[in-house]
Length: 541
Image 1 (cartoon, one colour):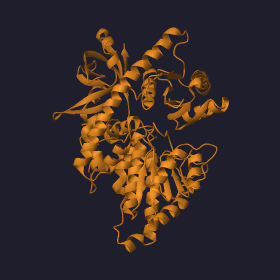
Image 2 (image 1 turned 180 degrees about the horizontal axis):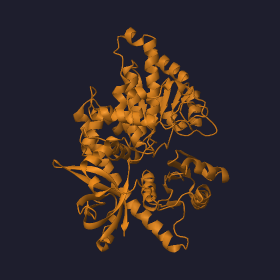
Image 3 (image 1 turned 90 degrees about the vertical axis):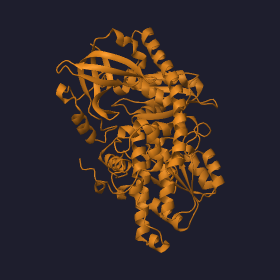
Image 4 (image 1 turned 60 degrees about the vertical axis):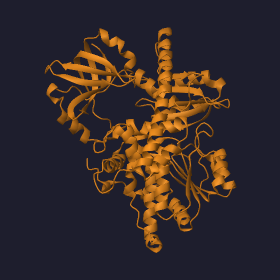
């Protein structure tokens, strides 16, 4: 439970680190032109912002960035991306949160005389790009104890090692530079780590906890203006920010830019030193996020109806693995739809949509015990040529297909899920930490649970179950349900909220008793602090 920064793992065990530091130190000292090529999600945006600002603080003057638009270039350091990057005339390309599968792109960079440093955390394939250096904790043979670093976490470690090397060479004193403090950027590292939903092992929990300390301004380092502005538009209060706030209020607003438009506005927001300017950019991101929410609601309704149609038309019910395709879907939103359907029906889900140029793109979300990226690898090996490309993590992955192969892929995917899971996974079973006595449903207990965090993927916040009398229910917002639940033991009535349960509001009118799974939180409204049950699952008794 000691999450002090002194307990962070040292970077020494990262494979390829010495080669990376040689490249970077040489580039900084030679004032070489460097270009950071990032991914178009929150992890990529935070890693890009971190790289630009930290390198400049170490004396690099020629540092630019480029984040490819997902609609024009797709994912990673492709040859097309390198050709555009060449307009910046970089001597060194640094990838963040991508690059481990960019074989052709790295080759193209070499042809154009550019060096390439890859920093990534995605799982490597059988063949590696011929980069000048690669730092990725998931490389075969890498001895770094934590394999769960996000892309921004990998970049933080690389920059920490670079700072140590430059200091040992006397670079900062020679150039009259103030020695940079990498802790200054831990708010970015915390945001990217939480938003990318990587497992919160102890090392990641330290990074997140230290970043949250800065965000909540507990110490000498204030919160970065861009993150503060994003928290403001998300109606979150500095001083009380948790990992959940980063995941649900800040991450989606950053991700929306990459899903619908261009991530540049997100990166500029994160790098802004002026709070008023950051607020203007945060409002732009908030507007984009509202558009994303509208598109997602329509797509989610289509997807839910499609699954219910499958269930009604099949004697076997819903398949163990759900795969959905719709010609009218937006391929930038399919990952969110897959996540919602996975939550709703408790099955590994892939959502597919047209991406132009005779290509279908999809995104998958998994369940505990099923490694989504490895599953796609199995499908690809068993059906050569079926998948154009794929990549990702245990719980989330992406892929590309030809339109004519969608039906064949659905069949192959569903069979692969059955083969992989067998009887080990039971859909519809929710594991909880048991029931809480009625006298535990109070603010002090909720605060104790909050303070034991940070909670997240791989280190889940405790959830509890109980049976309550449904006293009142009403819709709030566009898709949420506010509840009043009476505890039969104590007779007390408690506030509760069920996010994204709006489509099941009508059914609650016929219910008097509810079995509920919930998190216990504090609802601070107009100065009055009450316990609140945040419902994750519920059904009539």
